Image 1: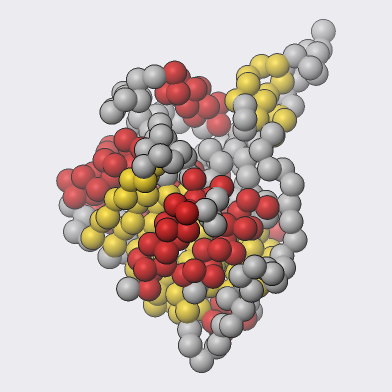
Image 2 (image 1 turned 135 degrees about the vertical axis):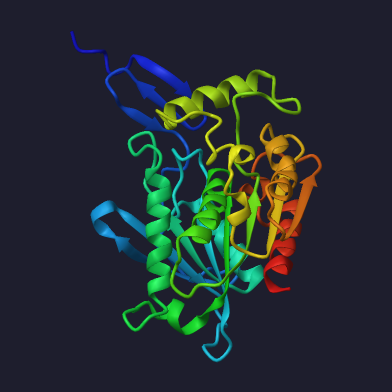
Length: 312
């Protein structure tokens, strides 16, 4: 007998629910908004297809006053959502990137990768790498995307992301250290409440939240272990190859993931990476607070810090 379509298999609210008939009901920001000229910041955006056959695309942002005679840093951004929800086109990330681009005065490429569990790891990483190859190709004679060719500086490239997107940014920075990526000069990465994890708890992770995250990880990343190097950088022998000169990490006091973020600086140093690392913990805030409220007091302060990180 076929399973009742309303019979639930897993409940990962507030992100998604899974039913026994295989249906996945995503609960978080399935709405999308079109590119625009943002009335608050003046930031302009447009969408591009990167690999239509794989449904990989991106939203590009640039300041309204951008001038081709003054090239701007290029930020490649990866959205969060536990690899399973959200998109570069959601209202949440559209607003976040508008404020970030306005504050930091950068050109940004916000990557839309395929989501788990339908597209399990390493597909989100492979999609992101393909997007980076596309970005690099825009600086060649074959490149056709004028917002990148005309306004972005290939010698001032940054990767950034929040939650799972920060995990992607970290792994892409390591991959670019071993696999060349055109003439892009990666200067640094910023990680907002990175989604790093491990089988054994650290800090005060031994609480009900760890059980939820453990189950979420197993479901969205089938076949992957929680101590694999891509999710637990403490086990990654390649951290010394992380490209870039500097790293900025933000964690939030109330976030269960904060202990992994706080340990990241030590992990890089113990692994032989010799760049500059700064880790900032924000009191009273929870996971990716600046994404939810980029115009709030703490969110705005964080974006100013990121802007300084990129421009100095």
